[in-house]
Length: 415
Image (cartoon, rainbow, N blue to C red; front, side, top):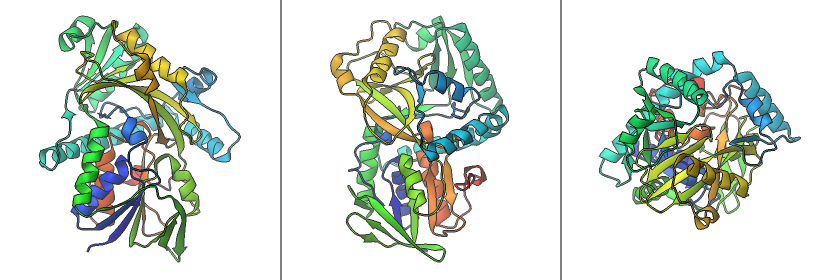
């Protein structure tokens, strides 16, 4: 049965939800307070990451964040503030940061990433798009034995999960990246990962959806959500009132504020990340993580992107130039001879990732408000999990059996 669906949020999650919903024959409207050309979905590293089996809420992460708190060039920063939502989130993050919880989440994170990768490949194979997609894996470069050992322990755990992982010497890496002068000891190579060019894919997807009759409402902010009995009856924006049968909350870092309009607690904090695009030929052909610096490097269509930092703080897009410079410096430390000039640094951008306290996204229906589906909280895996989340949202709204067990992603798990 065809339904009228309004999706709040026009990032990768909202657009992928629209893609699978229109395929099921639903009438879809996507509303966003931006013009669909900015945000975390446009500035991320574009990597599909089955390798990232350890959630953000790993043991010791809080201590690292506190240790680096006042260091404006650190890879992780948790800005303490007298804000009740932040304090509650921090407490939940601490509770989730146990070996047992991280271990429980490993197969869940791996399965949804692999499912997402399959779906992106199907989109590519459909012939409806012409987007850049390469399946070359991910190299975790390390400079110290300590970082190498830590990552190889993760690699061995990933092998147990059925992923192909190798521990490479510097010489073996050189054969894979002959045009890079790498200043490393070695790399852990995950063969499972792929990569794309986000600011190429998103416009293609939006254009395809417009042709298929999906309505896009840009620069339109949701001000209120009206509920009668156990259903949302309408949503009020700064321009109009929207009526639908079903609503999808794909509101990213702004979720907690929107959820309050539903008298609901969905803990999300904004994790700011930065990116630098380098248009010169860098010789880099395989995506990498510069381990000690926590910087991602992705060869995209026509340029190389350096992305990094996790700055958990307020909802703003202020650029901390020290963090940008740190990313550029890290690139030069790992790739001898790499040129990142002042213009590249000046053109840096940032985006806000929606971080849940336990490192798992929120995907699912609400128990009290029957016609809302939540799809948010993906932290650093929003791009990777975009297609899987969109597919799951369409299955929920179409009343189909979902491709994955949604229990671990329950949006009310902290209520």
